[in-house]
Image (cartoon, rainbow, N blue to C red):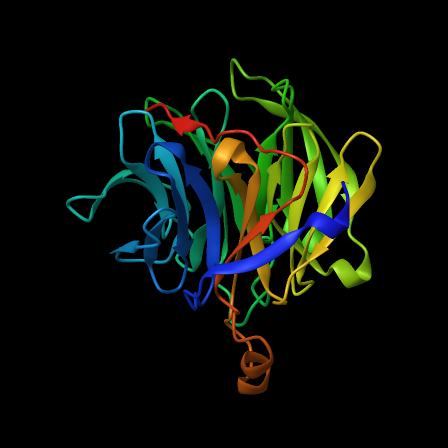
Amino acid sequence: MTMSSIKIECVLPENCQCGESPVWEEASNSLLFVDIPAKKVCRWDSLTKQVQRVTVDAPVSSVALRQSGDYVATIGTKFCALNWKEQSAVVLATVDNDKKNNRFNDGKVDPAGRYFAGTMAEETAPAVLERHQGALYSLFPDHHVKKYFDQVDISNGLDWSLDHKIFYYIDSLSYSVDAFDYDLQTGQISNRRSVYKLEKEEQIPDGMCIDAEGKLWVACYNGGRVIRLDPVTGKRLHTVKLPVDKTTSCCFGGKNYSEMYVTCARDGMDPEGLLRQPEAGGIFKITGLGVKGIAPYSYAG
Protein backbone atom coordinates (compact mmCIF):
# COMPACT_ATOMS: atom_id res chain seq x y z
CA MET A 1 0.00 0.00 0.00
CA THR A 2 1.37 3.38 -0.96
CA MET A 3 0.35 6.33 1.18
CA SER A 4 0.60 8.77 -1.73
CA SER A 5 -2.63 7.64 -3.40
CA ILE A 6 -4.74 7.85 -0.25
CA LYS A 7 -7.50 10.45 -0.25
CA ILE A 8 -9.56 11.36 2.81
CA GLU A 9 -12.71 13.43 2.53
CA CYS A 10 -15.63 14.31 4.76
CA VAL A 11 -18.57 13.14 2.63
CA LEU A 12 -21.24 14.03 5.18
CA PRO A 13 -20.91 16.84 7.75
CA GLU A 14 -23.41 15.20 10.08
CA ASN A 15 -22.12 16.67 13.37
CA CYS A 16 -22.73 13.39 15.19
CA GLN A 17 -22.38 13.63 18.95
CA CYS A 18 -21.05 10.08 18.75
CA GLY A 19 -21.21 8.50 15.29
CA GLU A 20 -20.71 4.73 15.31
CA SER A 21 -21.42 1.38 13.65
CA PRO A 22 -20.95 2.17 9.96
CA VAL A 23 -22.27 -0.61 7.72
CA TRP A 24 -22.54 -0.66 3.94
CA GLU A 25 -25.81 -1.70 2.33
CA GLU A 26 -24.98 -2.74 -1.21
CA ALA A 27 -28.63 -3.02 -2.30
CA SER A 28 -29.22 0.70 -1.75
CA ASN A 29 -25.66 1.98 -2.29
CA SER A 30 -25.98 3.42 1.19
CA LEU A 31 -24.01 3.76 4.40
CA LEU A 32 -25.91 3.08 7.60
CA PHE A 33 -24.59 4.42 10.90
CA VAL A 34 -25.85 5.56 14.28
CA ASP A 35 -25.48 8.64 16.48
CA ILE A 36 -25.63 7.01 19.91
CA PRO A 37 -26.73 9.81 22.29
CA ALA A 38 -28.89 11.47 19.61
CA LYS A 39 -30.84 8.16 19.43
CA LYS A 40 -30.66 8.21 15.64
CA VAL A 41 -30.12 5.57 12.97
CA CYS A 42 -29.04 7.23 9.73
CA ARG A 43 -28.85 6.06 6.12
CA TRP A 44 -26.74 8.07 3.68
CA ASP A 45 -27.37 7.41 -0.01
CA SER A 46 -23.97 7.61 -1.72
CA LEU A 47 -25.58 8.36 -5.09
CA THR A 48 -28.08 11.11 -4.15
CA LYS A 49 -26.10 12.23 -1.04
CA GLN A 50 -29.41 12.36 0.86
CA VAL A 51 -29.67 11.25 4.48
CA GLN A 52 -32.67 9.59 6.06
CA ARG A 53 -32.85 9.39 9.84
CA VAL A 54 -34.97 7.31 12.20
CA THR A 55 -35.15 8.43 15.84
CA VAL A 56 -35.65 5.76 18.50
CA ASP A 57 -36.48 5.98 22.22
CA ALA A 58 -33.07 5.22 23.76
CA PRO A 59 -29.36 5.46 22.85
CA VAL A 60 -28.81 3.37 19.71
CA SER A 61 -25.33 1.90 19.55
CA SER A 62 -25.24 -0.37 16.50
CA VAL A 63 -27.20 -1.22 13.39
CA ALA A 64 -26.98 -4.25 11.09
CA LEU A 65 -28.62 -5.66 7.98
CA ARG A 66 -31.37 -8.26 8.24
CA GLN A 67 -31.82 -11.09 5.74
CA SER A 68 -35.60 -10.64 5.60
CA GLY A 69 -35.15 -6.96 4.76
CA ASP A 70 -34.84 -3.83 6.88
CA TYR A 71 -32.45 -3.80 9.83
CA VAL A 72 -31.70 -4.81 13.40
CA ALA A 73 -30.27 -2.46 16.01
CA THR A 74 -29.13 -2.37 19.62
CA ILE A 75 -31.21 0.23 21.46
CA GLY A 76 -30.63 0.77 25.18
CA THR A 77 -30.23 -2.80 26.46
CA LYS A 78 -32.50 -4.28 23.78
CA PHE A 79 -31.90 -6.14 20.55
CA CYS A 80 -34.51 -4.68 18.19
CA ALA A 81 -35.89 -5.12 14.69
CA LEU A 82 -36.13 -1.81 12.83
CA ASN A 83 -38.90 -1.09 10.35
CA TRP A 84 -37.49 1.74 8.26
CA LYS A 85 -40.70 2.77 6.45
CA GLU A 86 -42.76 2.80 9.64
CA GLN A 87 -39.86 4.36 11.58
CA SER A 88 -40.54 1.88 14.37
CA ALA A 89 -38.60 -0.63 16.44
CA VAL A 90 -39.80 -3.99 17.82
CA VAL A 91 -37.98 -5.56 20.76
CA LEU A 92 -36.54 -9.03 20.05
CA ALA A 93 -34.69 -9.52 23.37
CA THR A 94 -33.46 -7.60 26.43
CA VAL A 95 -30.19 -8.02 28.37
CA ASP A 96 -28.65 -6.68 31.60
CA ASN A 97 -32.06 -6.36 33.30
CA ASP A 98 -30.31 -6.08 36.67
CA LYS A 99 -28.08 -3.18 35.52
CA LYS A 100 -30.23 -0.10 35.04
CA ASN A 101 -27.27 2.11 34.13
CA ASN A 102 -26.09 -0.12 31.29
CA ARG A 103 -26.53 0.20 27.54
CA PHE A 104 -25.38 -1.72 24.52
CA ASN A 105 -22.33 -0.50 22.61
CA ASP A 106 -20.85 -1.89 19.38
CA GLY A 107 -22.44 -4.85 17.57
CA LYS A 108 -22.01 -6.85 14.36
CA VAL A 109 -23.51 -9.91 12.68
CA ASP A 110 -21.37 -13.05 12.49
CA PRO A 111 -20.97 -15.25 9.36
CA ALA A 112 -23.79 -17.53 10.58
CA GLY A 113 -26.26 -14.66 10.94
CA ARG A 114 -26.10 -14.17 14.73
CA TYR A 115 -26.05 -10.59 16.05
CA PHE A 116 -23.14 -10.14 18.48
CA ALA A 117 -23.16 -7.05 20.72
CA GLY A 118 -21.77 -6.03 24.08
CA THR A 119 -22.74 -3.69 26.87
CA MET A 120 -21.14 -1.08 29.11
CA ALA A 121 -22.12 1.29 31.92
CA GLU A 122 -23.37 4.66 30.66
CA GLU A 123 -20.51 7.15 30.63
CA THR A 124 -20.33 10.24 32.84
CA ALA A 125 -17.86 11.69 30.29
CA PRO A 126 -16.26 10.10 27.20
CA ALA A 127 -14.46 6.91 28.39
CA VAL A 128 -15.28 7.71 32.04
CA LEU A 129 -17.61 5.10 33.53
CA GLU A 130 -18.14 2.48 36.20
CA ARG A 131 -15.79 -0.36 35.29
CA HIS A 132 -16.49 -4.07 34.69
CA GLN A 133 -20.27 -3.63 34.28
CA GLY A 134 -20.53 -4.86 30.69
CA ALA A 135 -20.87 -8.24 28.99
CA LEU A 136 -20.78 -9.75 25.51
CA TYR A 137 -23.91 -11.34 24.03
CA SER A 138 -25.27 -12.70 20.81
CA LEU A 139 -28.82 -12.84 19.52
CA PHE A 140 -29.39 -16.11 17.67
CA PRO A 141 -31.73 -16.31 14.67
CA ASP A 142 -34.41 -17.89 16.93
CA HIS A 143 -34.17 -14.76 19.15
CA HIS A 144 -32.57 -16.51 22.12
CA VAL A 145 -29.64 -14.69 23.68
CA LYS A 146 -26.31 -16.20 24.65
CA LYS A 147 -24.06 -14.48 27.18
CA TYR A 148 -20.36 -15.14 26.61
CA PHE A 149 -18.61 -13.34 29.46
CA ASP A 150 -18.96 -10.31 31.71
CA GLN A 151 -16.53 -7.96 33.51
CA VAL A 152 -16.33 -5.87 30.32
CA ASP A 153 -15.50 -2.14 30.51
CA ILE A 154 -16.46 -0.82 27.07
CA SER A 155 -17.51 -3.56 24.66
CA ASN A 156 -16.33 -2.42 21.27
CA GLY A 157 -15.01 -3.50 17.86
CA LEU A 158 -15.59 -7.03 16.63
CA ASP A 159 -15.17 -9.14 13.50
CA TRP A 160 -14.37 -12.65 12.30
CA SER A 161 -11.43 -14.10 10.40
CA LEU A 162 -11.96 -14.90 6.72
CA ASP A 163 -11.95 -18.66 7.44
CA HIS A 164 -14.53 -18.10 10.23
CA LYS A 165 -12.30 -19.77 12.82
CA ILE A 166 -11.30 -16.72 14.88
CA PHE A 167 -13.38 -14.02 16.56
CA TYR A 168 -11.64 -10.68 17.08
CA TYR A 169 -12.82 -8.42 19.88
CA ILE A 170 -11.98 -5.14 21.60
CA ASP A 171 -12.74 -4.18 25.20
CA SER A 172 -11.56 -0.59 24.85
CA LEU A 173 -10.02 0.03 28.27
CA SER A 174 -7.84 -3.08 27.99
CA TYR A 175 -6.02 -1.21 25.15
CA SER A 176 -5.81 -4.53 23.32
CA VAL A 177 -7.22 -6.32 20.30
CA ASP A 178 -8.08 -9.85 21.40
CA ALA A 179 -8.72 -13.09 19.52
CA PHE A 180 -10.80 -16.15 20.43
CA ASP A 181 -11.19 -19.54 18.80
CA TYR A 182 -14.62 -19.42 17.20
CA ASP A 183 -17.00 -22.24 16.29
CA LEU A 184 -19.18 -21.15 13.37
CA GLN A 185 -21.68 -23.99 13.93
CA THR A 186 -22.41 -23.30 17.60
CA GLY A 187 -21.33 -19.69 18.02
CA GLN A 188 -19.05 -20.73 20.90
CA ILE A 189 -15.85 -18.79 21.61
CA SER A 190 -12.83 -19.88 23.67
CA ASN A 191 -9.11 -19.44 24.30
CA ARG A 192 -8.91 -15.64 24.61
CA ARG A 193 -5.55 -14.03 23.83
CA SER A 194 -4.22 -10.61 22.84
CA VAL A 195 -3.03 -10.13 19.26
CA TYR A 196 -2.14 -6.42 19.48
CA LYS A 197 -1.49 -3.96 22.31
CA LEU A 198 -2.06 -0.32 21.42
CA GLU A 199 0.77 2.18 21.71
CA LYS A 200 0.34 5.34 23.75
CA GLU A 201 -0.25 7.70 20.82
CA GLU A 202 -2.82 5.32 19.35
CA GLN A 203 -4.99 6.02 22.38
CA ILE A 204 -8.22 4.00 22.81
CA PRO A 205 -9.15 1.12 20.45
CA ASP A 206 -12.76 1.49 19.32
CA GLY A 207 -14.50 0.04 16.24
CA MET A 208 -12.87 -2.54 13.98
CA CYS A 209 -13.30 -4.31 10.65
CA ILE A 210 -11.46 -6.93 8.63
CA ASP A 211 -10.24 -6.55 5.05
CA ALA A 212 -10.16 -9.06 2.20
CA GLU A 213 -6.55 -9.96 3.09
CA GLY A 214 -7.51 -10.91 6.64
CA LYS A 215 -5.90 -7.85 8.23
CA LEU A 216 -7.72 -5.81 10.88
CA TRP A 217 -8.49 -2.09 10.77
CA VAL A 218 -9.03 -0.41 14.12
CA ALA A 219 -10.36 3.10 14.69
CA CYS A 220 -8.47 4.80 17.52
CA TYR A 221 -10.63 7.07 19.69
CA ASN A 222 -8.73 10.26 20.63
CA GLY A 223 -5.97 9.01 18.32
CA GLY A 224 -7.38 10.52 15.12
CA ARG A 225 -6.44 7.49 13.04
CA VAL A 226 -7.26 4.05 11.79
CA ILE A 227 -4.52 1.44 12.01
CA ARG A 228 -4.10 -1.73 9.99
CA LEU A 229 -2.89 -4.75 11.97
CA ASP A 230 -1.71 -8.22 11.11
CA PRO A 231 -3.40 -10.40 13.74
CA VAL A 232 -1.04 -13.29 13.00
CA THR A 233 2.26 -11.44 13.55
CA GLY A 234 0.85 -8.82 15.94
CA LYS A 235 2.48 -6.07 13.88
CA ARG A 236 0.98 -2.74 12.87
CA LEU A 237 1.24 -2.46 9.08
CA HIS A 238 -0.19 0.94 8.41
CA THR A 239 -1.52 4.14 9.99
CA VAL A 240 -3.98 6.48 8.28
CA LYS A 241 -4.45 9.79 10.13
CA LEU A 242 -7.71 11.72 9.86
CA PRO A 243 -8.37 15.45 10.42
CA VAL A 244 -10.44 14.64 13.54
CA ASP A 245 -9.30 13.14 16.87
CA LYS A 246 -12.35 11.17 17.95
CA THR A 247 -12.42 8.47 15.28
CA THR A 248 -14.84 5.77 16.44
CA SER A 249 -15.33 3.04 13.84
CA CYS A 250 -14.71 1.95 10.27
CA CYS A 251 -16.11 -0.26 7.54
CA PHE A 252 -15.51 -0.93 3.87
CA GLY A 253 -18.11 -0.01 1.27
CA GLY A 254 -18.65 1.54 -2.13
CA LYS A 255 -17.75 -0.12 -5.41
CA ASN A 256 -16.39 -3.62 -4.69
CA TYR A 257 -15.89 -2.57 -1.07
CA SER A 258 -12.82 -0.58 -2.14
CA GLU A 259 -13.59 2.49 -0.02
CA MET A 260 -13.35 2.84 3.74
CA TYR A 261 -15.91 4.80 5.74
CA VAL A 262 -15.01 6.17 9.15
CA THR A 263 -17.34 7.55 11.82
CA CYS A 264 -16.31 9.94 14.57
CA ALA A 265 -17.59 11.92 17.55
CA ARG A 266 -17.71 15.50 18.80
CA ASP A 267 -18.95 14.78 22.33
CA GLY A 268 -16.51 16.04 24.95
CA MET A 269 -14.79 18.54 22.64
CA ASP A 270 -14.48 22.16 23.79
CA PRO A 271 -15.39 25.10 21.50
CA GLU A 272 -11.73 25.62 20.61
CA GLY A 273 -11.37 21.98 19.62
CA LEU A 274 -14.47 22.20 17.44
CA LEU A 275 -13.06 25.30 15.73
CA ARG A 276 -9.85 23.38 15.06
CA GLN A 277 -11.77 20.31 13.84
CA PRO A 278 -14.97 21.58 12.22
CA GLU A 279 -15.58 18.20 10.58
CA ALA A 280 -15.74 16.41 13.95
CA GLY A 281 -18.82 14.17 13.99
CA GLY A 282 -18.81 13.84 10.20
CA ILE A 283 -18.61 10.76 8.01
CA PHE A 284 -15.26 10.30 6.26
CA LYS A 285 -14.46 8.34 3.13
CA ILE A 286 -10.95 7.03 2.49
CA THR A 287 -10.05 5.96 -1.04
CA GLY A 288 -6.83 4.64 -2.52
CA LEU A 289 -6.02 2.23 0.31
CA GLY A 290 -5.24 -0.48 -2.25
CA VAL A 291 -7.14 -3.08 -0.26
CA LYS A 292 -10.80 -4.11 -0.31
CA GLY A 293 -13.17 -5.14 2.42
CA ILE A 294 -15.82 -7.85 2.52
CA ALA A 295 -19.61 -7.51 2.52
CA PRO A 296 -21.27 -7.36 5.94
CA TYR A 297 -23.32 -10.35 7.10
CA SER A 298 -27.07 -10.07 7.68
CA TYR A 299 -28.99 -11.17 10.75
CA ALA A 300 -30.78 -14.43 9.97
CA GLY A 301 -33.74 -14.03 12.35
